Image 1 (cartoon, one colour):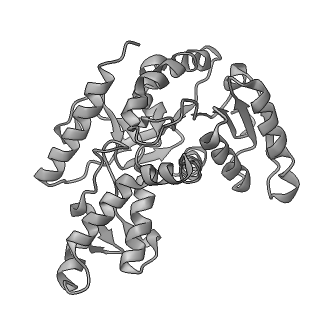
Image 2 (cartoon, rainbow, N blue to C red):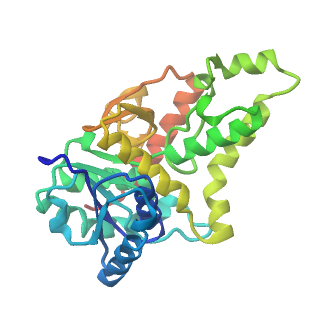
Image 3 (cartoon, rainbow, N blue to C red):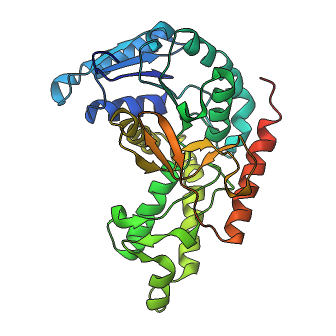
Length: 317
């Protein structure tokens, strides 16, 4: 923006959207935050509630409910709108219902003159990010999803407990679909400066790959466990959205496992949007880090790509 004010428009003021908004306020993420929802009364109420907490924060953020016209000069449009995931329902089963929702959102954002970055959090996020790309006509770098950023955070948290080390010193990733076919490429995992395979070899009586695989399962099933316990997940993903948005607004070139478009990396199908380490900056997802995966890991990633591509092909946009 010409005056260097950072502006974000949030579409969807459900629990995920408002967890993001609350975290954004506490982190003083931007100068201006606009809330849009099909339920205008709710958006107004949420804006009022956040504004009443400004006096207790370190932020001078301008928060208000608005319309699609407010997207015209935004840096980021965050999309959290969509129907809720039900207990026992896979993320992919949400696809058809949420595609219909996006068909009424994305064209309106584009029509406003928006030229920033789309950041999608609605599940199934990889496919919904691709839907946003197709509906918007934007350059692929400017359409990204939250991908496996939260899954990666969950992985590092659990590995930190297992190895008794600060999760910030663990360099391991969850890649692939944000869903049942996601996996951890252990060949690329590093504990501080030491590859995990070497840590296991040097401490075979203390740590094991079997325990790490259990952690990977816990990461993959965490969302369903939370949904069964409290009905939905929202705090963690809200904070993940803030982390990605901060990398964009501050032009950080941070490496995050966002959902971004493949162009033939790993021998996977082109045009699939999938979680993979990627440089994120003011231009969006600017460059994918193609890891040197094992044959087994490449097979798992291809499986994930095929699942996402097959499900996307069922849609009529």
